[in-house]
Image 1 (spheres, protein in one colour):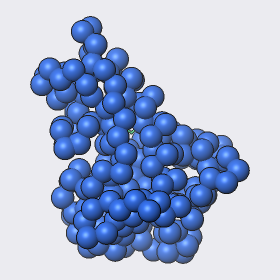
Image 2 (cartoon, rainbow, N blue to C red; image 1 turned 90 degrees about the vertical axis):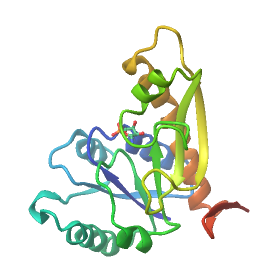
Image 3 (cartoon, helix red, strand yellow; image 1 turned 60 degrees about the vertical axis):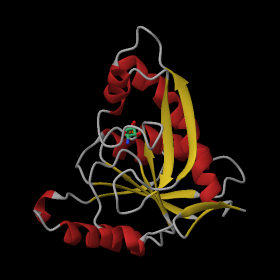
Amino acid sequence: KRVGVLISGRGSNMVSLAEAAQAPGYPAEIALVISNIPDVAGLDRARDFGIATATIDHRPFGKDREAFERAVDEALRVNQIDLLVLAGFMRILTPWFVARWEGRMINIHPSLLPLFKGTHTHRQALEAGVAEHGCSVHFVVPELDAGPVILQAKVPVLPDDDEETLSQRVLVEEHKLYPAALAEVASGRAKLEDGVVIRG
Ligand code: GRF
């Protein structure tokens, strides 16, 4: 499967996928990395792997989210992308785009969904006083961070944690979880059917 990755920043999850995809027998190839923000570190790191990159700045499209997404969709089509991976991509997608990629688009979210949707998830976890935190890979549905979960990984929350230490502990798990989840989807072992994840 040819995978496109959408990023907005440093791209460390994208790197973990690119590294995993180099292993013989991995069922996906990272074929294209698109950033909506120009000149981010993730684009340089993708190029280090020899991956094709594109920048599609959302700002010239103004409030017309679909016009931006049509440009993204066109780039994905031209590059014959089968599966779409969101990795630190900081734009909310319209129902039109989500429907187009339904069952073929996954995201990683730094919390144990359904807990702590949205941003500042580590701060949310610390304020809630939970003993465990983690990350989730899910199929993308129109509602934000609400898609059916494919895989999760847990970490303990330690007494002295702050947002930085906790996010670092979660990120280590993200870098293992995302390649594992992408492999399940790309190989067809995990599928979205009628809004739930089916394992075959
Ligand atoms: C990760 O924590 C991811 O879970 C969240 O945004 C961060 C992106 O980091 N959605 P990176 O760009 O992959 O390094």
